Length: 115
Image (cartoon, rainbow, N blue to C red; front, side, top):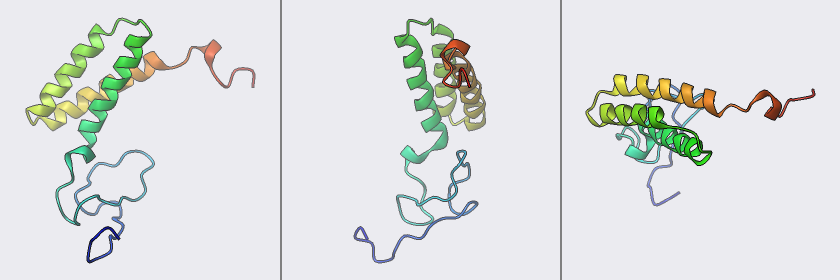
């Protein structure tokens, strides 16, 4: 244990403060006390915004024009900071879908080629 008098228990889906689950996450061990508000670093929308920013940087490093993506990211971040979570979630979902399409390997680069 890490100095806590009671052992940490695993939180099952639907319990505690976590209301949005990333794909594949089956259970979750919170970093703070049970029933406490999650740390800002555990916020799903904030983490998705950081991921989108990193993916935009990858595109930029490849020499791609990312003006549209940067504008979409700034808009989503502004909505998030203003507390309009639903708007920020929709915006970052659209942005991540666009980034996924732009970063997908071309058919000649596909790892499954020739199978």
